Length: 565
Figure: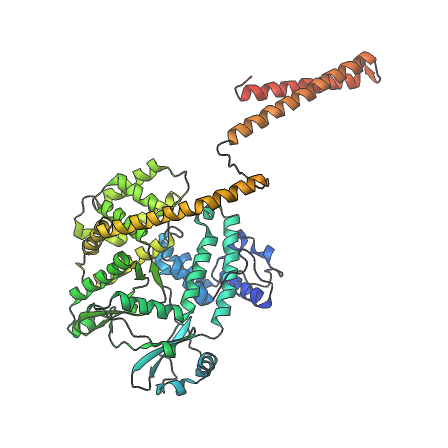
């Protein structure tokens, strides 16, 4: 499993520094030298940046900044491509023009050799592909940044596809993640606007997601869970997976022979009911989200196949999302209140689903949410688009420095994507109308007698457990008090002004004491007649009186300026 060893610090190995310089060269190539300078990156490297060419090529310089960012991420490889894809779901983190461009990120890279495929098989299974399969095509069907896919036939005649992970991909990703963690730390230190977004937390979340994608046993578990969720549902087909021919770096699953949802003309030629397909696909995603709380997080057209009888088949279960029952209920309430234009409840719903400080200006948030709802107020339900509502909502909350939980961004991205796919198949698709029965069910389920009984039972059990543990806990507390080990910590809030006033008062008292001492000392010097003298007055005493006068005038001005004597 991948982990970030030391957040905010980079390793000093040759691999780390070589990769860091490679990243910097790409940044300079695509015209991002201002970012390098802003983050003071050269201070953290053992060697300077003098050897790196800072001038972008002419043809690169003609492109927009979002286009250059996308091209740079593609050139930097798997970790950065996946990061770009994650950021394309975060309108709170990057501007809209970057979102649109990052959504175009391509994951196509040259394949690795069949000899390396055989080495991976030997390391994982101690057998070559030719020994495990009746037939195994040496030329890959497709190649991506994490791995590549080969067609094969099992010994029982079943056609399958085999995903094989790229050699050393885990080490490459691990180094990149440590460097990204360092970048995130620098963003928080040097870019004030980024502090509220907590880039280090985003990198940590990204590391966990990428770690799951690289471990193929996680994808196997995801497929098997989907199979159980939709058992008996004839509208969906989940590919079979073969655990006996799969490992952490090899995944063997059924070869799906359908038509991609993106090939609309081909679907029409084969007599598919496009309206029915769109409706089924949308309802299946909503069932995953609202009923099961476990959903395919990347339902783009290339990951959806249509089989005979308009059956929908999802593939590539590496990226999934999870929602707790409470998040599902809170999100359902929010959507229903948006549709019914209940402004007060929408504000409450947004605050329930976001991470925020206690200093949120609720009145300003409510006012902006009301303005957002006005855009949809007079539209008929069939013209409401979930994607536009979510986009407006995510942009609005980010202005108030509050942020949805990461799993909710994935969910909204999934719903927006499936709405786009569905409308390509059927322009009249009404996602919100299709979602209403699922949301109503979520809303009514919380009042079912069985649910209430379960919750009551759980709460009662927790109270009984607390009562059983209470004597031991009290005994432990009393023991610590007797031994003098009990510590009570206080957190003082709102004392900044008092602290400032006390500091100001103490400074004035000290200033007045120095002033008095200066006056007394100067008087003694004048009375003693200590030379040198000016008009028979000791110069040192006279200088002391002048200094005391200036200090006294300064103190008086300070008191008058603050309006208090």
